[in-house]
Image 1 (cartoon, helix red, strand yellow):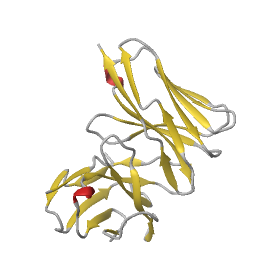
Image 2: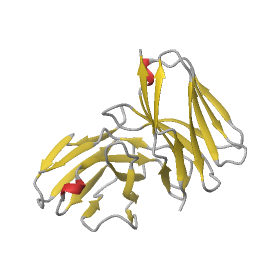
Image 3: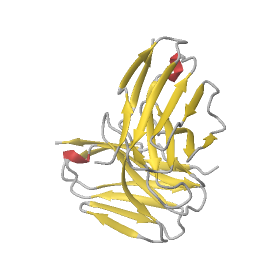
Amino acid sequence: GQQVMQIPQYQHVQEGEDFTTYCNSSTTLSNIQWYKQRPGGHPVFLIQLVKSGEVKKQKRLTFQFGEAKKNSSLHITATQTTDVGTYFCAGRDDYKLSFGAGTTVTVRA
Amino acid sequence: DAMVIQNPRYQVTQFGKPVTLSCSQTLNHNVMYWYQQKSSQAPKLLFHYYDKDFNNEADTPDNFQSRRPNTSFCFLDIRSPGLGDAAMYLCATSRDRVTLYEQYFGPGTRLTVT
């Protein structure tokens, strides 16, 4: 079945700095979704990418879908304490989502 | 607000004692999913209902069962919980399963097995 790998597993960021988390699939994805899970919370949908090379922005978050539709990235600029949490990418595998292992972000004030 | 509700938020059960977790939704979505999430891991799909059609994942233990009596409600039954079943159980809904819709997650039920 489809495997979605996500790196890094942990990201410790100084407040104000930028970082990127990467998602790679063993197969071509029809689309990719990103979710954020705050500590003690549940996953919350952030965005969906469908088109090859697609780039979408949400304030300080920039999401990109690779040209081959086998990878995706999430870039956060000027990290804030509100960015703390685990970010999951998920590729649609037929009727279900195949989640990456997530990148857990902590922020040093 | 339309939402996904899970009860209880915390559940403690004894080893081998059956337990039922509840999920309800006001979104009128066709699909309801049950996930198991252990600490620092991704959610793992156990099964889902597409309307009344039950779909089990191949690696979901027989110990886990589900019921969906109507569109709004879905239950997760664990017949004989073991210590390894201690986890967060997340219910999620989606408008449809074959098209490009996001999933809406409930707040989860944290299950402790003593």
